[in-house]
Amino acid sequence: MAGEGSARDQISALIFRYAERIDAGDFDALGELFRHARYGAGDGPLALSGDQVARINRELVILYEDGTPRTRHVTTNLVIEVDEASGTAAARSTYVVFQQAPGRPLEPIVSGRYHDRFERADGRWRFAERRIHVDLVGDLSRHLRALPREVR
Image (cartoon, rainbow, N blue to C red):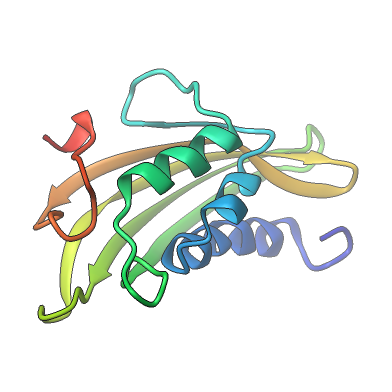
């Protein structure tokens, strides 16, 4: 990513790559995004590593015959604040997850906010922290095997 566009472009690409990887059911690649980051939900502790992010998604998210969760994470309202001098950045965005499970119409199943922090290391931007806030909850029964405490 070094030299591949502005800091905002690189950070936006990381945020959108998260959506791509989770929608593809590629949880190992999803975890790799957080190899150097802390990850958590709501205002709770940020303790998950990249390997834990991958493992928890494999355990919780239902995958269908095509190997995906049949979802589309749509991320919007992206606000990025970059501090070039310190090599850090923060971002806020809103997400909506749509799902079309077998025998069901396309429907929104959850919506909320991402609060992210980034750091520059070796000329590349990477996640330092992601907090996922859940604001609106629909039918998650065809998406998750168990509901995280934050959405119960």
